[in-house]
Length: 458
Image (cartoon, rainbow, N blue to C red):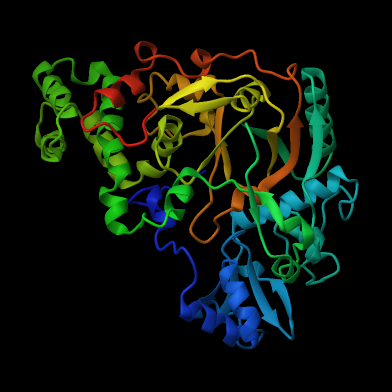
């Protein structure tokens, strides 16, 4: 499950402090750490930074108070005696998923280390890193050089055969839970310096990986955009809060059925450009005895920790800037997105072209950075009487974990790529199937009713 208290101001906090390029002090810190001025400049330009955390220092064993962080993959490294090793104590579920992905890729090549049974190691993380580092107590990092497995399909039967083969091979192993998919009309790549990739243990497989920046990351990368605390609180994402709360209220008409004049106030506030009008509504929800407890529970829940659970997962389907990445367990939905594009704020299905790709992700049962619509915490159990149809029909899921310090994390999660060719490998789904019109989508109607309209809404 998501940590509801990690980002109380909202998902925008994950990209606070993003820099488009290193500062002089970043280069100097890396030079002091590595003892190599020329290479330090290259490391900084490739997204590496020095992190200092004195609380984790263990001077009697090893100086872990400083380490090298690769902000592209999110992997932390310790440097000693001219070589790097993974800083396992600074790795969380997002980084362990990178290691599990290496294992899944190796398994598809029939080169996965160790047996399929339980492995007892000094690390005891429950993940694939035990097999790579724990069995021999080896600190080597070359196992990170594990390329994505590539396939090609020119028909639905070929596509299904590939997916079934991948699932069968991975499901017989110790860590696999389920497959996820993401379809794109074309692949965008993040290219890195080969010497840097070699230094990081990623070898040639790290030189060119899929660029899977989430929408919030793409926004932060633009030089004219700065994500600071003011942006988090009052930036483009701010205007989604009011319609989301109103949608939940509209979804539960019984709450205020005895108080129609308050419902009218809520509707007027939804259509008002003045923030203070809705602020007064929120205050009266708390103070007016005629407003039932459920509505006040919604107000408290949302502003305490609800904003980093259901609301971001749902609203990113409508254009909200998020650090999550859309995925699905439905291969036909992924196929649809491999032949669709956005034109003037509207999704359009296009004729199939060569170069389309479906990315295959393998969720590990040991980690918690993947989740689906049926695992979302909606708050009180009776709040969401109607899950938004976009979420439901797209069999939507998401990966989370990308931040300013783990920017292309999702590119490191891709287990396999399926390149699609010809006119036979196409989806039967229509735009209307996955993007229902307003009269059948209460959330979309509520978002469009809102003034000002949320930025990015489609």
